[in-house]
Amino acid sequence: MSEARILVVEDEPDIAEVLRFNLDKAGYRVDVQRRGDSALEAIRRSAPALVVLDLMLPSLDGLELTRILKRDPATAAIPLVMLTAKGEEVDRIVGLELGADDYIPKPFSPREVVLRIKAVLRRRAGDGAGPVPLEVGHIRLDPEAHRVTVRNRDVPLTATEFRLLKVLLERQGRVQTRSRLLSDVWGYSEDVDSRTVDTHVRRLRRKLGAESDRIETVIGVGYRLRG
Image (cartoon, rainbow, N blue to C red; front, side):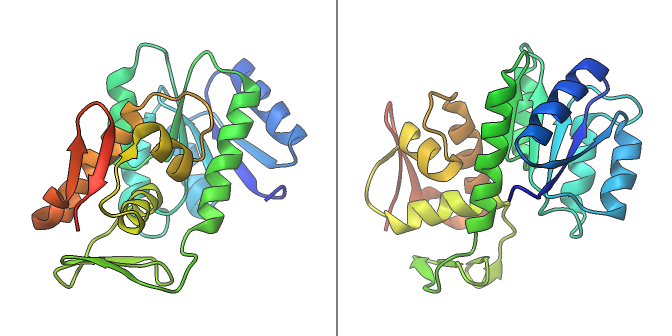
């Protein structure tokens, strides 16, 4: 993991240099792009292990770049960590809806950025582990093939959505608090905005279609998957 190549897409030179310095210090190889269009070209030439992506970029903004990457099978699996200004809550939620793995609000602690990136890469490295398929109702999740089907139809999920559904399936019938899901799915031990969980649950329900009502909201607590 320490040799992973990180692409930082940030048009503010000072912020880009802070990210480069701290990620390099943590053992990563770092490339920097300052425009959305040039970043897209760089990613298509050689996919990085992870992209740190500012939302406000010249030529092609972060949200549009995310849409393009997630629609292309060749780049859809690349994990994305978004940098958002403090007041950009709507953009942050849209970014998560589009499939971003994490977001970090500005101003940020460089140490936190490094820890978040390590958590995302660690989770991604563990995806697909475990040979036993999980089934509830018409939902079937195959961890080894990294495949989810509903009523025998493939359901494309992001890596985070896959982990979330896997945890809920493994613990069906048991209430999972938002803080527990943040810890077990996202790898956070700190207090992180629980709306991250709500956004991904909403997106997951939409993709599960007729089986969506199996994910029950326990008001004021969290979520439970009904068997």
